[in-house]
Image 1 (spheres, rainbow, N blue to C red):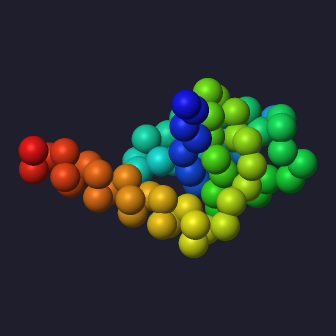
Image 2 (tube, rainbow, N blue to C red):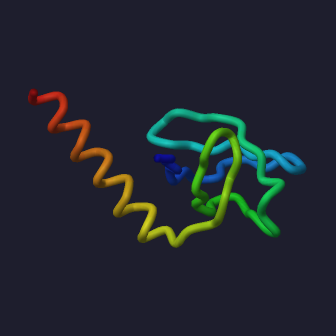
Image 3 (cartoon, rainbow, N blue to C red):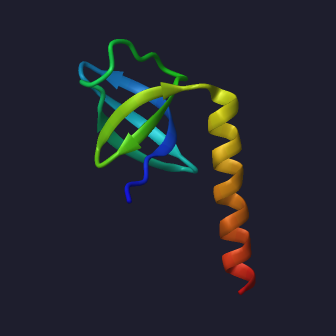
Length: 75
């Protein structure tokens, strides 16, 4: 099973982007996408942005991750 996580693009530099996921910034390749702009949400898997996603869907997914972290902290 593979997991792709949503992250917000904060910088662009050619075919790479700096993305932010809950304060963690990472360089990722955007070579698989036709167009990416700062502020877009993209799905990241093994260092590649696979597709742009709707900001509302990204927010829902990130909220679920936050819930899981909170439950884990309680355990």
